[in-house]
Length: 113
Image (cartoon, rainbow, N blue to C red; front, side):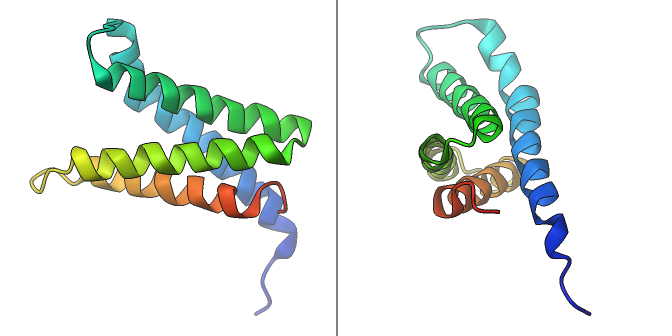
């Protein structure tokens, strides 16, 4: 069976929207606490901002913003994987592995889907 190449752009949009949904549900409670003393607060703000930049820049066809936001999402996810890894709860590992992979994909491909 041949691959369905016409669905590639739909898949790319699905990934971009899913990143924003993950940022919303995973980081919104941290952002709502509004604590400047917490480093995790700044990580949550950065993740949400770059996920929104990725979605908005896709609407405007700005490839350099997609690459930059994808790279930053990958870096933030890699940081979260290294420093918040817990062997008993794999939910964080799965969330940040997924977001890191998607960020790396958009850093590598840009807007060429």
